[in-house]
Image (cartoon, rainbow, N blue to C red):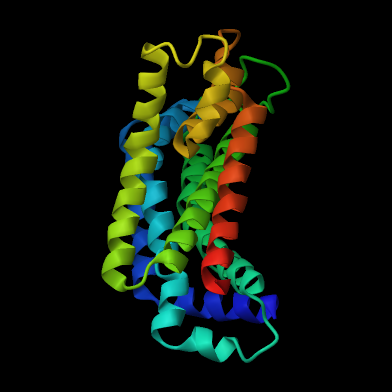
Length: 265
C-alpha cells in the first residue's frame, strides 16, 4: 500500500503547477546568484558559499509548500475516510505521502543544483580537476556534498510540514501553522540558541553540539564544517557533524510520528 500512496503523491506533484513554478523560481534564483555573484567562475566551494544563505531561506519555503497540505487535502476531500476502509494504517499513509512528496522535492532541488554544477564545469576555466582527499583542495565532490546536505535539510523540513498538515483542521489553519513554522525554524530557534549562549545557559564547549537543536543551524553547521572548512584548511570547529545529523534525523522521525498520531487518534 505504501507504494500505491507514493505513486498517488507523485501524480499529485506532477499535476500541480505550483510545484513546477517553485522549481523554476528556485532554479532562476540559484543560477542567478551563482552566475552574477561570480561563483561559477571561482569554483565549487565559492559557489557553495554564495548559495548557502539564500538556500537557508528558500529551501524551507519550498519544502513547506510541498508538504503543508499533503494530509489536509486528503481529509478535506474525504479520502482519509475512504482509505480507512482499506488495509492501510495511518503510519503507512504518512510514510507513503512523505516519500512521494520527498521525491518531488528532491527533483525540485536537483534541477537548480545540477544546472549550477554544469555551469561551474563549463565556465570555470581556471578550475583544477582535483578530487579533494585533503584540506585546501576545491572539488566537485564538495559541491555534491553540499547538494546532499541540502536535500537532507529539505527532507527534514518537509517532514515537519507533513506533521502540520496532519494536525491542521482547515486550509487557513494549515497556512497559519506553516507561517509560524517558518518563523520558528528560520528565526526562533536560532534566536533561542543565541539567547542561551549569551545568558550562559549554553557553554562554549557545548555550543557546537547545541546547534543541532535547530534544523537550520544543523544544516548550516554541516555545510560549513564538512564542505567549506575542508577547502579552507585548518581552523576552529564550527559544528558537530554527528550531532547535526542526529538532530535532523530526530526532527524528521519525530515529525512523521506526530503526523501518524494525528491521523490515527
